[in-house]
Length: 426
Ligand code: AMP
Ligand code: GLY
Image (cartoon, rainbow, N blue to C red):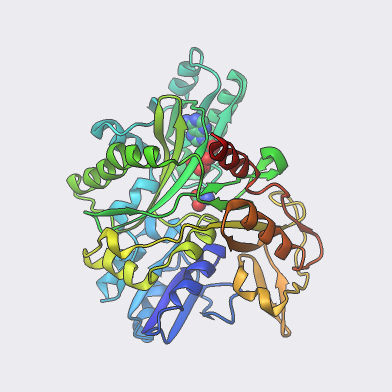
């Protein structure tokens, strides 16, 4: 089989490595991929948002199955366009990808179907939003309606900050069209859990839970990033909570999308907060999370391609998806300065025995070397019997990967480990 994976980050590298385990796979093309995945995929210089280019390539190479991984092409309708030329795909069509593409859509969906989420108001007019903020509870959360490179959510700790966020999004166009409408919502508290799921539109099969670490610095300080590391499973996601989420969130969401005529097939990501009132949805993503995928897929014991194809053909069942009960930890190594200014172009040295443990996000190939080419450069992953062993093993490997100006957090998994140890004592 000839596969095409759309996207070019660490998440895509993890998907590609897992897909390669299937013996039927002859070749995997990555569009655009990155210079660090050369051993696992054939990278082709087609941007993930270049839908016409992707379609032409898929036809030319007679691609048997395409995996569209990032949010942008999904929201733009890449799956619809590929299916229109007969290419079977993993991922939701445009009408279902809107669950991530529009926060207003997803909030209204949750309200209509009684799915627990933060209370909210929608604003299309900046002055009305500013007037509302005069009496809103603080902290409050301002969200741009559309995709904003993960930066469209502002937690405002003061009324002034809240107003500034509204002005920046709605009057100054900080996120272009994406911020012309906003959601202002209640600030929730509690541990966050990421649950990715496979779904064929009728059946939903949650994957192992995980915890992201979004802030740049230790102790969850510093700026928000695309994710500095992950650990799976997430100890806050107990069996009891999992059951509650299935009944109050996962199934109702899948059924709601079907009832709306927007059947969702692919990976639906539930960003949850375990609040004192129970689990609530913070956000939906219409795709695999990054860097959650880098800890979730190494724990998947089933064949990924088979499961993906079942989501496409509507034949998914829970017994097709099996996860190991081990733990996995991913430490992201970034360029020092990220997510602000940083330098790139430094050679990456990676011992051969670690190649299977590294998912490359931001690198380019030049003169036989692999050079850093992004803020987040690569993720180093370890799987072990328990969270402590996974964390220790991941950091052990990190020490053996080198490039100039490397920066990483030293506490990935620490909070999860403390929670895990506490539950074991109880
Ligand atoms: P997002 O960009 O949608 O992933 O949101 C970024 C982060 O903002 C989430 O991971 C949460 O930590 C936080 N967040 C979003 N909505 C809320 C909320 N209603 N209450 C508290 N924190 C929130
Ligand atoms: N890790 C969060 C996301 O993929 O959006």
